[in-house]
Amino acid sequence: MSELHICRIGEEDIYRVPQLERARFPARFFFPDIDPGVLEQNRDWLAPNFHDPASGDVFLAFQSFLLKAPGRVILLDPCFGNDKPRPSQPRWHMCQMPFLEHLEALGVGWRDVDLVVSSHLHSDHVGWNTMWENGSWVRTFPKARHVISKVEHDAVLKLVAEAGPDTVIEDGSYDDSVRPLIEAGCVDFVPPDARLAAGDGWTLEFMPAFGHTAGHCAMVLRAGGESVIFCADTLHHPVEIADPDIRCEFDRYPAQAAQSRKAVLGRCIAENAILIPVHFVAPVACRVGGRGEAPVYRPLVPSEPKGFADV
Ligand SMILES: [Zn+2]
View (cartoon, rainbow, N blue to C red):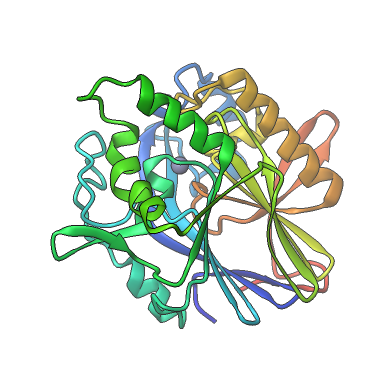
């Protein structure tokens, strides 16, 4: 089984498809108000994978997720893409990374993907919608429908309308990674609680998780008696499980984002759901236990209950 395999629930295999496996950031880059004591208090499970106590740095991943169900190939949050001009993001400005090669290694060609879902429209969640070919941005997955939350898209359109002619929206990603899809007529704008896909014994739905952006949505997969919450940027780092009130610099509406974090963590506890956030480094997936008032990180381990296969 591929090292990119996260788990199998029901007949669905879930894989991570990384672009940056492990990026180091000063904790205060993401969390300007963080009390370093929080990292220290949780050092026994944060270090060394998620946190480097010597420097105080935190580690984040940048990746997509692939769902393979019988007859369906679904890509969630198509990362930042290649060749995209992002001067404000030196780590992936004009990058060349083996993302499509990872998909190929998982037995998925560019013709196979039939649905692409973006939790929101930040540049690291829409990039592989398009690729640069013969002087223009073309669809990477020509057979796919693309799903975007209508609330999210309306909010971005408002930004576009209010911006001056020289203003760059979302690092330019709307123009090179979203607009070409809309012009091709392959985008479905849906409500933030919409059913996105379903098959024999499984469903995939949006769950509103506003705050990181105006219309940011998590995705909930149900299969084989299990729930998986792909919470996207509702959490950026596992320390937010220990303290969901830590403000993230990249949350546009911080108070609403904290409420959404607590709602997702509460649902994980109530349903014993598997949590898969975009920016957690491998092994990415966890469950969330309850200890009094505070949620607790519980990594997936081989002794998980029947119906779940770890690798
Ligand atoms: Zn992100």
